[in-house]
Length: 417
Ligand code: RNT
Ligand code: ZN
Image 1: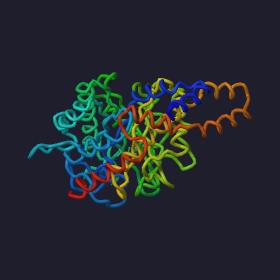
Image 2: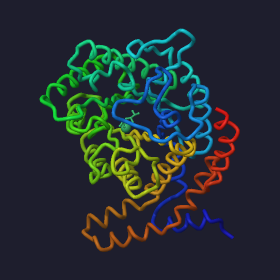
Image 3: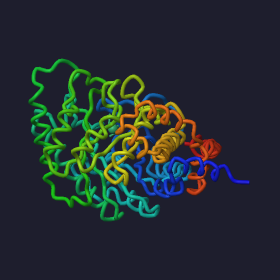
Image 4: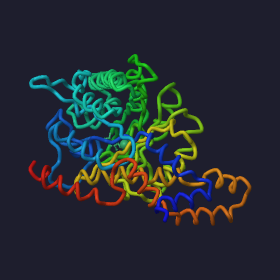
């Protein structure tokens, strides 16, 4: 009697899909796991609230408040998900030894040594983000685009420090570091000058990128946004600004967060548009519910559609940098992390298991009737059996039995914090 995987494999083979090859390939695709789901985007360098127009809601018990706790939680997640994890850090997660506090403009590689040790022990790469929020030098809602030259200088120095730290990560881990610049700069109400802040923003990012770095090691990105909480009327780093900036600056990569567009705009459709022009593109994968709410990523239609486009536009998956970006404080955070990571893995697996060349042929030959029929047929193929095999080979549970582990961890560890 054949196993469920064997019979599923045969069904896919009839469509020309080699599921063994898919599984082998997916195991090697890095996906960045965002450290900030573990502590509601707070970090270790300040006592203040989360600012910058982003918000977490909920107060589920057990959040990490020390580097050791956060690392233990990340380890727990890594043990529950299939695939290749990369660690995504924010500058606010610097680890200071007693009395060694350094402000954001003075950060050094040594403040991240413990993270490097963590990554090296687990043989994973690190991505990085300067933190342009949750800091008193965010003046009147502005950082890199502030009219105050001292404020801009502080944040430019922060950006430069982060480039040096990114290069350190790449050199230590042997894996290129994707460094993403996002600010919440903007105004709550109708501006009198929309261009001034953008001109200053452009100059400031140029000043950051003037810091010398090895382009094969550090991959600078800039992320756009449509609006934030308290920043409803005007965002400096809008979609057009950001995409134009990246297009005009060699080596700068656009980063699209699918929570950062109007609700009927779809990042899935933007992926082939940007990959037509840019050699590399970066993505934040999230789930906005009515707005950029950063709900946990699920295996839903648009998530799958984004995975399909990444796979179809870039078969080797080496031109796209994928990172999760969401933060839900209302449920168990380990579970939130795990569900999101597994959902994205499911989406990639499903996308890789589609007869993409055959579907394209149907489109190119104008056979739209059959294209629709075949696409519907694909939805009933037993992807769950391929998923189970993938998880088994990665040494994790295919079904939800991982959740028992999370509940045990909650009882043994989280509830005691
Ligand atoms: C905010 C952006 C940004 C942040 C992280 C913490 O809307 O999506 O990427 O979520 O940098
Ligand atoms: Zn984002």
